Image 1 (tube, rainbow, N blue to C red):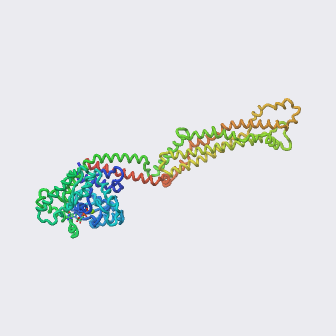
Image 2 (image 1 turned 60 degrees about the vertical axis):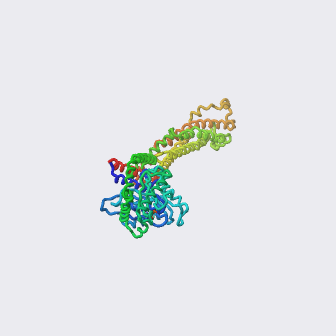
Image 3 (image 1 turned 45 degrees about the vertical axis):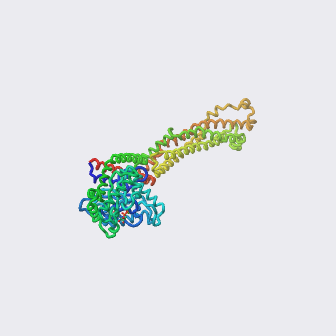
Length: 625
Ligand code: GDP
Ligand code: MG
């Protein structure tokens, strides 16, 4: 089974990693919150920083009047081999070893100001300090700003509440062990620490009561007896008060004697202060039997042991949380898309994969399954026939125009039997009207296809993260469609031109002879220029044009589908593929540029995932040895 050192060391490492990732107990259940820690709470000047320093055995916390601690200080103590040099290291300045603890103190002040400015305001982003020393036990302690009842030094009025909220945010976590500091020279009934602990830990199972300034309690009394009496009375009162409020701690109270202000001014060193504290308890007969259960050294051991027990107990739930979070993060990464390989081959593969995905969606639009393909049929079934119907043949084949065209074709010598030239001109000019609707069909289908490309790009899940590639595919598909349109346009115009280049003679052979004239060939010349003659010519041409119209109504869609729709399905990105294949790695990476916000999000998640995975590995390697 894991040793105490390794367990607490494990928690320390995970805590540090959490802070690097900005995961120090924000929204939701975080790993940080699942980890046990010890928070030091109490009113201003109750001796919090002194207790911390005693536990560490070194002077290193900034001091001064008012609210000195304005950011949480996460203090991780790492026990090193005897004889090793002591040093501190901040998470915000990795690798920089502070062996002079006066420098540590300065750095804490400066780092506090760096975030809060000189405003004397508070911030809940913690400062992380690790202390490596043979004289400490493995322990994580959090020093919090002292609770206060009034704002001072031009601090905003909200500071009282802000501090209260911040302290509360740490101690209300069920995994937080509360070190509730109350000065013995004040009425315990008014202790901020106890008030808060009672609120957030009503059963008192995770609160350690610490009484500081025991030495100040008997100020002015020299007799040990008197002091002992005072102490016993005091403690009895404390419990009366506590019981009266039906609040009882599960752990024994620990009394502490820290250095007084005078000691600090005289630079009494911590090791000496500890020795003095030990002597203080041992030399007092009243403490005799409990002397080894008093003092900061004992407190440190007590905490460390308790922390170990808590960690042991929490490990299964921490592992469960880690596994659950890993699953969630993996799912989130899948949703965002995994990072892409950096080599050209992997990138090319990714690009082609995504093009294929796009192609699939596009084909579904055309072939059915997704909407849009039906709009092409609408062009043929609706738009084209309507446009054909609207062609101005009535006007073009009106009596006056037929006469005009035929006469012009005849020239100075009017036709003798049938106006061959006139017919041809009338038919030719009529057929050219078909070019308009033919081209319009090509364009209409082109726009449908273009719209389907746009839609398909938007609907291709895999492409969502790559705006550059989306633009590239849109451009390539657009170019291809343009090419298909041109081809289609030429083809439909050719269909129309083919109709005028060779007329269906059969049609005219089958035309019935002029009913009136047929029976009276004796006077043909008289009727040659009569209205009825031209009307007949007009109606013959109209019938012929009607026949061609029926043909084109059928052949234009075939041409359009052949040239545009079929090609779009078959070869929309062919040119693009051949180009991409020749691209250099740099160009490929540019195509795979992602939305920076998305990349950042993925990176954050990937980092968290790495943290949780390494935490799992660490626990695996430590906990079940
Ligand atoms: P904090 O504001 O809660 O962090 O309190 P500090 O640790 O800064 O202590 C406030 C003042 O009380 C300092 O001048 C300390 O020297 C003094 N002090 C703290 N604990 C004791 C103690 O046990 N005995 C005596 N005599 N003075 C103490
Ligand atoms: Mg302090």
